[in-house]
Length: 111
Length: 112
Image (cartoon, rainbow over all chains, first blue to last red; front, side, top):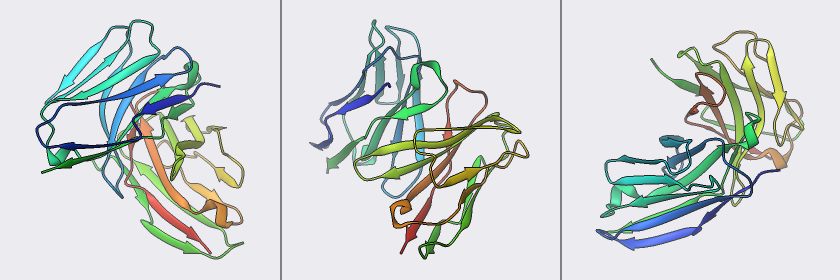
């Protein structure tokens, strides 16, 4: 079955620094979702990518899906303490509508 | 619109007890799902539904039942709670299968 691997597992950066989180799939991605979760809370939808080479941005967060549709990256520019939390990637498991998720990347931003 | 709501927020059960976690949405989502989130395991799909009267198993369905009698409600039943079911449970809804899912705030369950 399809699996999603995220890297790094955790990240501590100084405020103002850029950072990148990666999500690699064992199979072709039919739809890749990025969510943010604040500690102890629910998941907040960030972006969805479907087409190879697609790139989307929201405020200081940019997500890309590579041409082969097996890897996505999430890039945060000029990080702020408000960016802290857990970032999860999710996908439709090989088109079955049974969604799978990566184990998450814990981000801490030092002021 | 309230989006996806879950009740209760917290629950403590004794081994062997049964209970129902409630999930409701008011956005006419066709697709609804239940996940559990455990440390180091990420989110794992328990059951999902693609419409009223239609449900199917996810990755970890054992010990859980669901039903979808209306479009709005998708309750999750624990038949006989076990300590291994201690987790945070999330319900999610999506306008249609294959589209973005929107998550509820979660239910923290502790089984003693």
